[in-house]
Image (cartoon, rainbow, N blue to C red):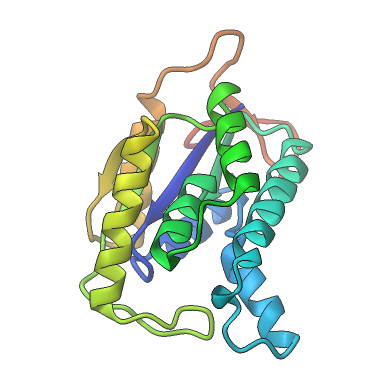
Length: 203
């Protein structure tokens, strides 16, 4: 299985790209941090990011979702962020690095869980606030820089996806996927949870 990460500046349109990929039948694994924040808000915790345990909760949900998605058996899978993003968040929040996070990063690097080419979705020039995204544009740019540093520090190559229409960005992502090496023993075919039978990449 080839797992591709989408990361980038908060509010850059990453979710819209992933939804478009899902609509095309691709396997997509949703972001963990947003749902951890939503759950904590529902429990009455106004600022869950101030608790150091916040990072470990994200790591657990990320791992759970990746393992659940593996059952699907898709040849190509797109992930909304990864433990490397959680590393960037850990640094940005100023917490000591989580032991659980670092163990997970060691494991995904050792096992080659994700493709080393990572899609970095570039900013649209503004940030639209949400319940989970309470960050200014200036803060978002700082957060973006920390993400870049984390991915490069762990040996990942950033493939920049410039501002454009959602469909143009999707096509840029798929063009890179088509030109990326296929691991030995795999073929460029995936199984979609939304359809029966094999589907060719980009069908």
